[in-house]
Image 1: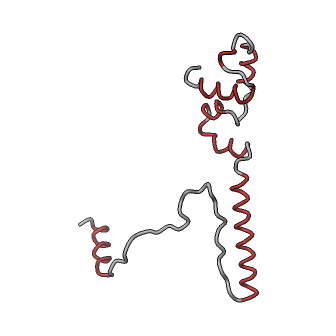
Image 2: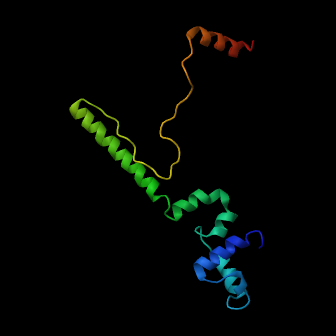
Image 3: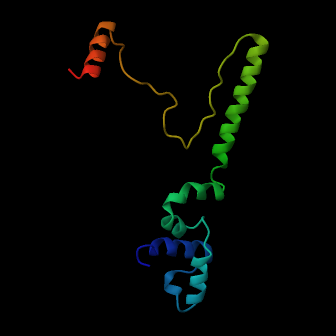
Length: 131
């Protein structure tokens, strides 16, 4: 219990207002056993014991609603933009809805400066033949 004692104490405190110090007094061992036995995916102890299922737990807890809504918003915007492009003859791709939880930059740059064709041919031959 010491390995996951912090998570269990957090769950007890946030869900029942008991701590591990209350075991044997205000909190019976039977009540603690039932608390742990029927604990849901929204508990810290459950997440520590099932780290591979943490993403599914986020869906069950409703933490993925904003992600799903942002994706639906972008899809509706893209569809509206395509319809407007068909009707007007000008298609402009809409910007995606900002996602504050996504820390990555929205644009990805691969490579650096362009390579001359002669340098590319030499590089390509070297990568194929290994010489």
